[in-house]
Amino acid sequence: MQDTLDYIEQFTDGFKPEIGIVLGSGLGEIADVYCEYKIPYEHIPGFSKSTIEGHKGQLVFAEINNRKVVMMQGRMHYYEGHSMQEITYPIKVMKKLGVEKLILTNAAGAVNKSFRPGDIMVITDHINMMGANPLIGPNDKTLGVRFPDMSEVYDKNYIKLTDKAGRILNIDIKHGVYIASSGPSYETPAEIKMARYIGADAAGMSTVPEAIVANYCGMRILGLSCITNFAAGISNKKLSHSEVIETANNIKSKFKELILLLIKNI
Image (cartoon, rainbow, N blue to C red; front, side, top):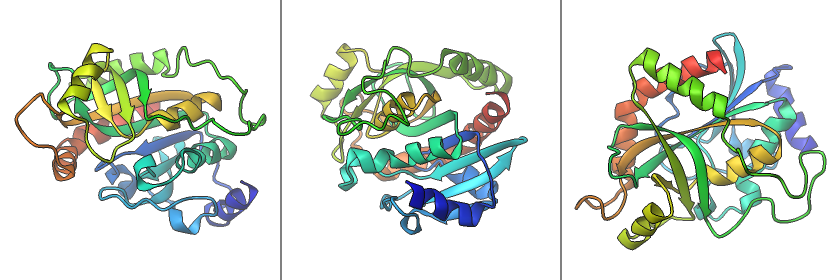
């Protein structure tokens, strides 16, 4: 960890971020527009390289609306072969850098039949179906307690602020539960049917490990899902990552507006 922090310090000239953002598939444009310092993941000690299309794989530092922000332009995924500890290590680094507020974003499939591609959903809770937990292993008392409470992972005040921002920007913000599976195969229609029965509204392959670790570290968390497709079995269309990227590109303008307003107000 100290090697990581020392390396980052070489490039950021004492920049101390208060807000962290993880930008999911196809959602990284905001980091291109606002960038003071950027460091590729593969150069940072302790970081793993992101290999997925739509994830540039770099840590970006910027001042946006008078707030100091650090952004992950793309994330690491469990299905890439990284361990749970590796994919959540950047969240611990953000905490050590001073981040207390975290915005997690992702591209997700609609499980709720009333949702449509292009919708934005604020995450109210999550279901971990990844078969693993990033806190397994020795506990670091400098970051959090051994058995962290998970009663309110996603900050209720941030959810209200998102609703308010949606009204200002004329965006219909959906509310829902995000379910995460390991991937990389998409869920089967039967699995999506099960997900709906147990209370899920959107499905994806990320975010939950990061949310668990951020909550463990005492961060206040906002989760946002860009609904990029119907989950398996809801439509007759076969699923593809290219569709995810295409839809994310189509809604990135309104998504960027929402993020900028949230940075100002959280």
